[in-house]
Image 1 (spheres, helix red, strand yellow):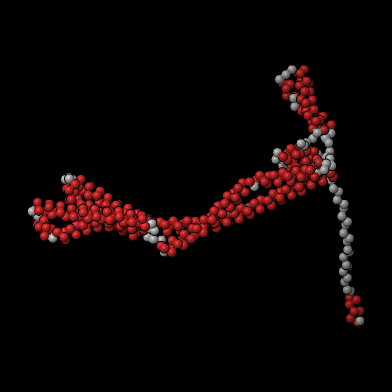
Image 2 (image 1 turned 90 degrees about the vertical axis):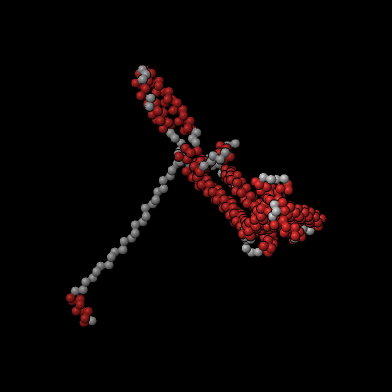
Length: 395
């Protein structure tokens, strides 16, 4: 492999090196076609290597754009359906907050009603009665809420809906019995305390039973219904916003990714054009200096110049006269002079490409003298005399 090929393949060839190489080849009438082919091949290789990262980026953008186009129809259909079901505006969270407050109020009321009846469960401590009543109220509310979730989630599955109805019926029957027990317990407690309420409840047992059954069933069912309704409102609001955000993000991403893909393609196109223009520039530089080498050539350095430089290098050893005996000074001067002579003489016979270009045989152009412009004599001014004026009048 030649020095030229080695420099080209290693990426070491620079514009200045190319000028010197072209001049050297032109001066020796070497065929420039292989070097030009190597330059084009080197530029093609560099272009291919430098385009790898932009191409990977372009492929990634195209993959994202394809994915966005694939997901957008489904997201758009879902968004149209949600907008048709829930409206054009996002569902507010206010109703969910109101339902949550109603559920909390139902739990508090149920706790107030249940606390005095905890004696049935042998809980006599007032503080523990409040804790037990709150837990019992929360348990009943959660029972009916889970039953409602099971019923709503079943939709077209009738066996699951029938099971949810059966579970709800068991809860209603259990709370009905619990309501009757609360009424009898309160009537018994009032009779022991000789409270008139005991006589009233004993006189109207059916009304008392209906009332206690109602408050026993109403508070957990209302609390569960309010919580379920509030949760559904929150779910609708979140679904509306989530579906809309996904659709808008896909639509925006599709537009932006399409722009990015076009910009990256244009960048790659401009990259190829820049590399091609750069390659043409190098070919033009090579052709110019190749022609200069063939026309001018170079002047070899004279032997006298080598001798002069070697002697000057030997004279640089004169300051050693203060450090060594004077008899050794000629030998100390001869050694560097001889070494410099060998080095300069080798460079004289084998100059580098850059030095060969620096020794170009310059031809000074002689511009011929331009012909002097012909001088046109100025017309003489003629003055009329008195006699001439009289003759003109007579005529």
